[in-house]
Image 1: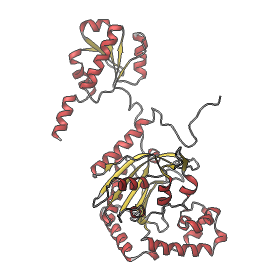
Image 2: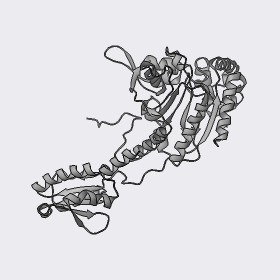
Image 3: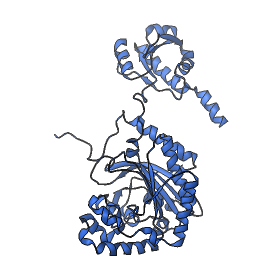
Amino acid sequence: MAQLKAVRGMHDALPADTPAWRLLERRIIDVLARYGYREIRLPAVEKTELFKRSIGEATDIVTKEMYTFEDRNGDSLTLRPEGTAGCVRAALEHGLLHNQVQRLWYLGPMFRHERPQQGRMRQFHQIGVEVFGLEGPDIDAELILLCARFWRELGLDGLRLEINSLGTPASRQRYREALVEYFRERQSELDEDSRRRLDSNPLRILDSKNPLMQPLIADAPAMTGFLDEESKAHFERLLELLDAAGISCQINPRLVRGLDYYNRTVFEWITDRLGAQGTVCAGGRYDGLVEHFGGRATPAIGFAMGLERLLGLVEQPAAGGDAPHAYFIHVGAGAESRAMQLSEELRDALPGLRLLLHCGGGGLKSQLKKADKSGAELALILAEAELQREVVGIKPLRGGEQFEAAWSDAAGTLAQTLNLQPAHASATAAKTL
């Protein structure tokens, strides 16, 4: 029988890897909370029609990349390829948008059937941020400032911000017509992908990575010449706000984003450290999407960050960062029962304590080997002698002399030794906050 393996392009995060994931997520979520953004949790599966209507039926995502299937009821369902459409659907379904401003974020896996490569998997993870109900350039600036703070908190440098405006749907349509006319006159110079996109999604030709296409793209009309006056004013004010906040950016008139729902502001944060997949974070405005889904006209803007790409940039935590503080060794039936009880008492008293209780039997020597292998700082030892005297042995595993603590004093001793906060201190601190 053939060995079972993960689906191509869908990777496991093993125990040695997950501390880096959690640390990255915690840092980002902490920043979001400081800015007043709230979490929303969304289904991984949606009706296929949701993505066809939002992303665009002619886009590569819908035509080539979505994981779509028919369920037992005959409904066409799709594993979400991105988060914005589902977030809009949820906000509408649950009445979150009527005369309200919403600042939301979500985290989870997305799915696209692409060719796996560095920084691009078929199952990948995103943190997405969406804002509803604010139409001015100030919220555009806030989201970009939020991203800049992420990079500072994560210790990242060298990311550059590229930005553009797509104007209103009407101005985007005029630009689309001009592009079609330009590229149709040069159709013989287009590669296969660009010829396919010419009628269905011509703006995506500007995003081609084919080096042979770059001279042709460089001479194409620029969006800036087709912007309406309101969009120009919006974009100019955004640039002023970013300049006042000390955020440098590069205006890229070829930046169009791959989804049909974008209008006005679009932006990407890009690095040169991840090869071809250099976009770490991207987003923009989608003021017409809520109305397109049947709701009232609602201004909206958002962005998404790929966690796998960020993990490829951030400094990884030191090995052992997820190791237990202490490994509880016990020898004898009576010691086993008391060790289990005492473990629970210590966890109650010290909420931050990572305590691994030995299971599976074995003598003192073999348990000490397992304690050392676990990466724990301390071994707690309870055998017949300690049981009789109602003490627990505490053996430093990384150097130092073994000592004892009475059962009644064990939590305080561990708190002092490991620099942990007792439960009553945590509760007092919470009340103070």
